[in-house]
Length: 409
Ligand code: T4K
Image (cartoon, rainbow, N blue to C red; front, side, top):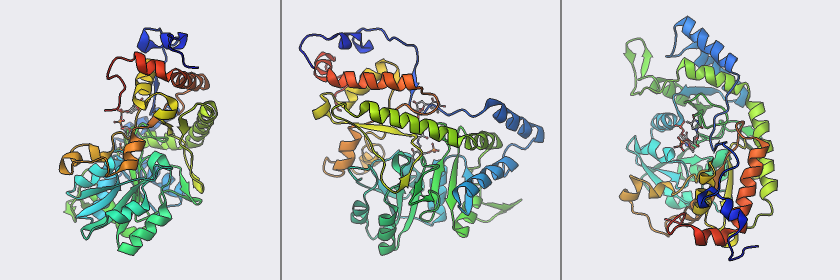
């Protein structure tokens, strides 16, 4: 119960002069580290071969493992997902405008803007946080050539409805599947939808290469074009047949990726266990909702996301973030404030409060919590205990926080 007296819980918070009971720092996005000996053995083999990049054997092995696991015809490994998205947009011949969600990591939009394509933002579904197919349709103009949908939180978006919109308007549909390795939609692995899907193997993803990405497609022409473009357009020694860039994955990254892929089942088990612990520990905390999974989808649980309803919880998300950060629990407010409020997009089209109201509301409420193999049951207990306490004493914390702290910008 909230009282006007100072409570022991609030006094114990680091932000109010208390001392933390632990030295542990908890991160969102802490990498899953595969068996060290296995990684070092593969790195050693690459050093012995003196072949470190440019279509090396481990990059090809990495691609083949993914093709086999996901049942997709082509996996084109790249240096990172952002480059993979740009290359795919170029391979699809996109120009003019491409519709993207406003609520996504900014790389989705940047990958297009980098090519001189205008990302046109649209709003998301309130419940799932995924791109809203009706909003996509409303954003289409005569300049639109494609739709780049995102599988936000690694959870499949409404692929069937987006397919229908793309077909109705003769548009190319492809997916930013950066966080979605291992996810599935109606029992088919992500990687098989649209013209192509692009994965990230950044350090923060469930399977990682340190830095890495992949273009997945069942289309031979897109795969061939992407293979050329990732390596300067070289079709053969001294033979350049298309525009290209350097988006090659190195052998060292592939070594990490192959070892990481081999431990996927373990990472998934840990993530599921963590997700279930968070869900049950926060179930009765007023104003806190663990964003649920949609039916007919399989997910990798690499993102544990809560919504904080400030009216019910009695504390704003930003103040909660500051309190947890002071405790060395480095939660993140992905994807605040929404791409439409980031440069260069906000200057190109100054945002109003009525443009993308769902994105604005969701972006103001979400918090990503630590998960993965770096997090233990006791850590989750501590995080949930703190969140529950912050809610229980929300009024007092809000009153005692220095002016401007944690208040919505
Ligand atoms: N599309 C979507 C929907 C995406 O989410 C992303 C990437 C992309 C496209 C682009 O994919 P890539 O081109 O990166 O392959 C991080 C990641 O860098 C980024 O890959 C990821 N999404 C995004 C959601 O998160 P930042 O700017 O938040 O990174 P940073 O440095 O703040 O680190 C994130 C957290 O991870 C921190 O808590 C620290 C921790 N961390 C990070 C690294 C790199 C570690 O503990 N160890 C590490 O080695 O973007």
